[in-house]
View 1 (cartoon, rainbow, N blue to C red):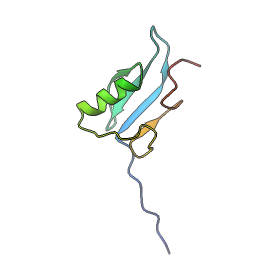
View 2: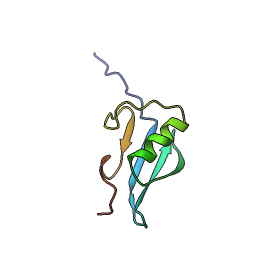
View 3: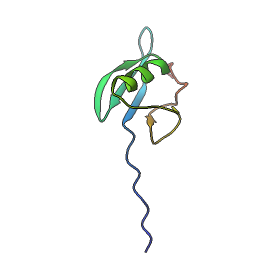
Amino acid sequence: MTRSPRTPAPRITVLPVQPGDPPFRIVEIDGEVIGSATGMTDVLIAAAAADIPVHDLEDPATVRWVGGGKLSWKPH
């Protein structure tokens, strides 16, 4: 029987867009809410502050985008 390797959950999770002025997304690192982001730059700044290297924001091993990808910053 072949076992599939378990892929660890990404350390960064970006939750769905929330209404506001400007709209924002909550960012979690290691399961803890660390703040909000109004764009991709804020996510990268949060990652750098937590010493998490991000080479590709679309890599699911690095960032989990909930409710839209890295280009989704307006409420639906």
